[in-house]
Length: 117
Image (tube, rainbow, N blue to C red; front, side, top):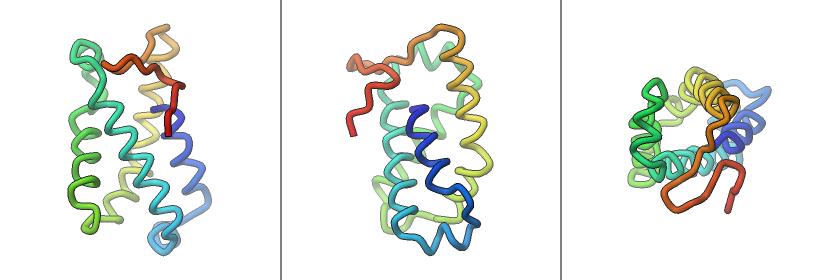
């Protein structure tokens, strides 16, 4: 997940909201990475999520579901707000989890850093 956050941040670096919305390539990259983050969050064991209640897992998973099920109606202004207002804190939360020595592992055995797409 952390790698996907980093990819999003690299994709939008130097852009303002208008430039982001105009760039199909960047929008597609950001949406794809948000989807992967949401899917990975959904696959985390419940006890792991319960031990990190400050991370908004439900909202992260909900964003993935909105993107996947309403792809053609994704609110790009909302995506921009999430990327700029919420993603940095999520990155910090993931970093703190990793620094504590905990491994972020999904229910199917994938760990942080084992990106498949």
